[in-house]
Image (cartoon, rainbow, N blue to C red; front, side, top):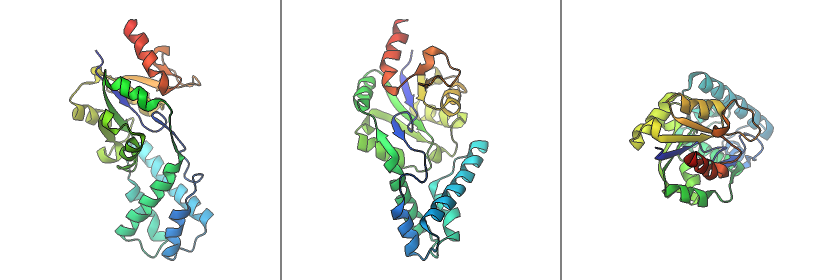
Length: 234
């Protein structure tokens, strides 16, 4: 019997832009200028994006997650006269706030989660480079109290699809994989990651791009209730 519903966050519970340029990062750039940085705005975005992509490639290879602090420590010494830990923190917090402008909340989702929370324990397992980012958005969405736990890759040190992050979340919840369903939008990280620990996965895949059974595919997170109802009556 399913007792727990576990969710990815980005692309699942919220729409978002993964871009590191289009949101606009004028405040982050202004911080760099205040410390004597001489690069222009476009160069800042290009250098930051290139280093971020380098970190991402290594994380995808090793499944070891990196933090925004680590990225900031690697980037700032080459562009500013103040690479102190205090400035790294200020820059990272400013950058994350500006990046978050690309996150969009879904109409009807809080109400659906509240209904599901009456039947299941809810939790989140998400890849992220900042430990406060997802809890902060859950608070602003008004749904944080609905979730038993939020497991982030940056805190565990391992990113999906590593089995380690799923096992960690199960330990926190005090349950087993057979009692859980995991819902995400990325075939490898979410669907195959969940299946690697013998957990049922559901994939948001409206364009039918992934090789998943029809019973495991959602067009939208908002279709979850009807899919669970069909599964229960089958």
